[in-house]
Length: 138
Picture (spheres, one colour):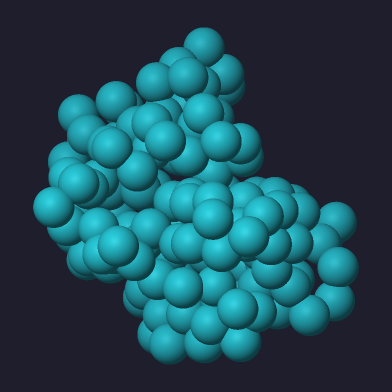
């Protein structure tokens, strides 16, 4: 089994999409091992997105991610990183396939409802950022 991190971003929470997003994950055979709602501080958002600190969108994305509560989740399934990324759709909703979360609900590249780890190493780091081992169900 593989694990990954997924986040319902502030726009997804504000639009009341948590149930829809989680439902799509569960219908795809993905198990939720841990979940929490929190509001990131600016320092936490900057730490989480530190890999992008040289990119032009860094300030904007960190401000956006602190604009409201998020829902962080640990997901588990065979090949869950790919499954979750397929469910989410392309980062830019204009490029996302019909029926994906981002195509159905996102407004732009930044306000695209969800985040998902892009690989096993990133997933491990991102999971540890939000969850202790005691918080993750086996």
